[in-house]
Length: 201
Image (cartoon, rainbow, N blue to C red; front, side, top):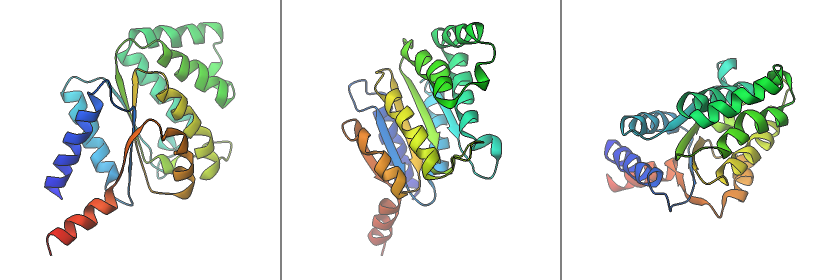
């Protein structure tokens, strides 16, 4: 798998640096996607490509809470983009209690509006999309119904490329339908592993 892993990372890096290419890439699989996502984010950073990443885990609440995901992405955007930082600071100046607003308003003011101001291309890596939840009890399909439209709108902003990983759950497959015109390729890790097994037998 090492050779295939390198081939995938090379392919993903080419996708990330192609301004004319599609803006969403979804890697699905039962296992192994997390390691690839981390390696990909590291490779982008080492190459000087602006990358914002979040690795979701159901085993740690602060890494699976949907509000926490939005806040962390906003923080990371502010860290690497002056324009995004200015937009987020303005949002807090208008309403110092913005972090107490409902999810839709927080997404708009802390994520979508800052993303609209970006001048440089940015890759957002979101690993284990299927493991998110939030304090309002929107777990599983309910949480995905909230976050996938946000990703879809982010992808339409032009300067953003989204690298998503998840298990191939039915809710995610259905939620990815709006991406079809942008989705350069759905990479199924299980299929690749299976082909490699056949190739070596």
